[in-house]
Image 1: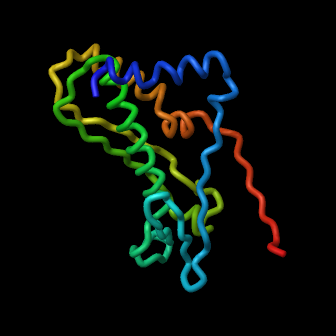
Image 2: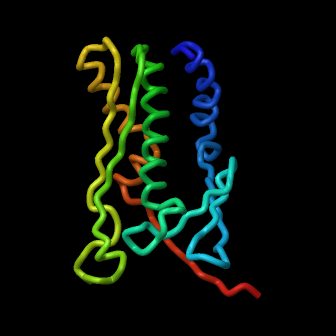
Image 3: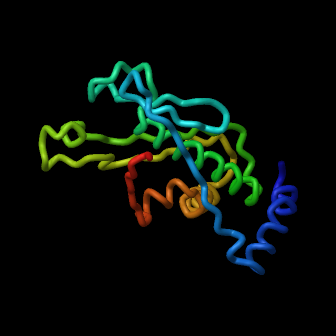
Length: 170
């Protein structure tokens, strides 16, 4: 896909969202079921069933997916797609690209070993390795726009309103 094709694909959507802002707001959903035999949750991905379980650092076997890994994978996926779309729009030729996310966790917090230890990632590093002849100023612009338009990056960077509920099944 080139920049012209991308613009043609997105133009009607942008026009619709300008004229009817409410149509741009959608609710994405995810769901899963608790495994009745293991400490695991079966998450429906739309393509397959992903079974998430405890990380080995919390007693898991490593056979199931770790939700922390899945968060980083979601960031890599979103940032990679966003970077590719922005590169296409800016007409930056990318011969090859790799995306990596790393995150630091202190499992003392997750396991309740130290109440002062944080639960969750304390740092996440996102990096791109690009094979391109684009000048550095174009690469800088590409990174800036990727950060700006990547949904997962912005969600992590700008804490959304978050709530949780639990109800008894009747």
